[in-house]
Length: 108
Length: 122
Image (cartoon, rainbow over all chains, first blue to last red; front, side):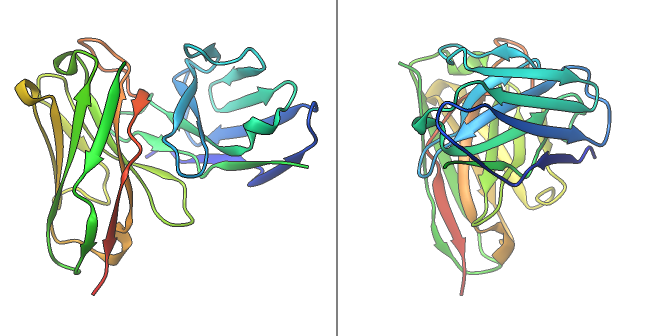
């Protein structure tokens, strides 16, 4: 089973600043990686798939990068509504789909 | 507008069973694989199970294999998760989620419900 490790656990960023979240896989994924955002009490929302493709309706300030084992999610100019948990998920190694432990993004 | 609504959660004693339902609307349910994903208190997301769009293939996380069964009724646009031999560590909000593939399965989800809470406690 592929283990997904996200860092940092918590990220505190000022509005307008850049936030960079990391996700590392214990096995190679190609670009079969997705990112989700979850706010308290809400359903998760797909942000990125294919490591770098923005899902429908996702603002351009969200961008994904990486391949193989190391991936990043960047929020170029943090807005107050971006305060949330962010999860990466690998879908390369079937049938054991797996999520990272999450990064909590806080607004300073 | 596409929508998923889970139901069936509640407080269940350890060792007992419960069945969750997920009602889909606003899209062709029979063309999409469906997932169950859970989030335990203070923890991150954990993938639980997937069923193919025709219902002919299922996969489970190791933590629930042999205890949980995923199923679907396409004419009723409904997904199920039968949970047997429940343990305290199964306590979580359970989400159903649509696989993004249409008549194929990709493994990531582009539509999620708001979840239903299952608490396993005596």
